[in-house]
Image 1 (cartoon, rainbow, N blue to C red):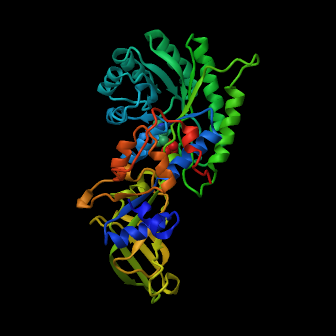
Image 2 (image 1 turned 90 degrees about the vertical axis):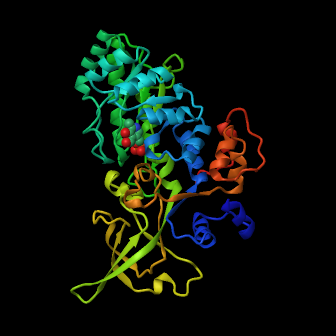
Image 3 (image 1 turned 60 degrees about the vertical axis):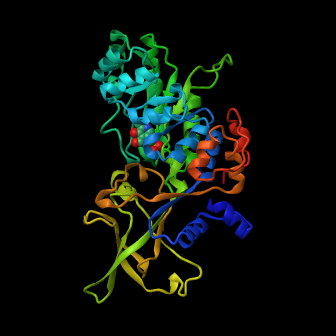
Length: 450
Ligand code: PLP
């Protein structure tokens, strides 16, 4: 593993950029690769526990299901939001209890519902009547959560077009469940992915409270609130995670207080389904310029086109499906003869490697002139990138390099699933004293939040 070697070399913890530099030089590589900052994922979890202690995270597997992410989050004791049979099976294979899985796809394949029943995944979401009939027939032990439609107008990826029951339909749906004997335990919503307003959560939690009241009137034991995903995961966002957490905590205290007026503790389980929050900032993508074209323009200027070895059919599918704005950063080697700032700037378009002209990563930005073989990096590329990438035209997805400072490594070595983590990190043979169960407070003590 490079980090420990570099630590000995530099006498201090290397940065992600050091790992990129070292990978390029020592591996003499030209293929695109990611550097995964393990500590960043741990730091996010610690921050979640600090800022929203009443809300249990159930990581949305769809966002990034690379083995290291799933193993790490499993070891931290996090639950999982699965959308399909394959996702459920991959989480169960980590030794996660079915009780720590929510099957949070309101429209499910029949055989997948049957599978959920067979493996003991009982908590599932729904938002329409026909789904209730399927569940009544296929999963008698199901504990259903009504997903309502909430204001998603402040989100980069709106989900309300496809999912969520109008609040006016809630009574009818709960009544139907009652009539056909389906057990309802609570309410869920999703404010949309990349949510840029903390007010969206405030309003949605208030609506969920209304659904709880409807459910209780019908005799259901309403004890499960799922506040979905949408939490910011990158450094520059219109609303910060801390602001969102504050709004969530205030709304929960108002509508779902932790104790009642007699001091009795609430019996409500509150979960969320964060995806991008946990992984977006931990992944930095390094891409290589494989080809270049200079295009004369009418004003006598020269525009540049660079072709990278990862594109829209690979990691940059996020520019289409996730509506994500990516920011290319020419990667500079300090020992370069000419600093980038001395080079001429050009209007630049960046393409992916395939033969499709759809495969355009970024148009009309200004960059210093770059050369074939040089590198462009993209930070905060962990969410909805690798998850939906393909090998179209025979271009493989980038490999993963891991950044694990030695004090983080010490912590990892205590994890119950250390042997599997060490295999992924390719650091077999390191000594370890695994704990029987993970003590988050103890282990995360050394991880700085900021
Ligand atoms: N839960 C559900 C049902 C989703 O559809 C999604 C994303 O599409 C998520 C959770 C994760 O959302 P985010 O990555 O914004 O936290």
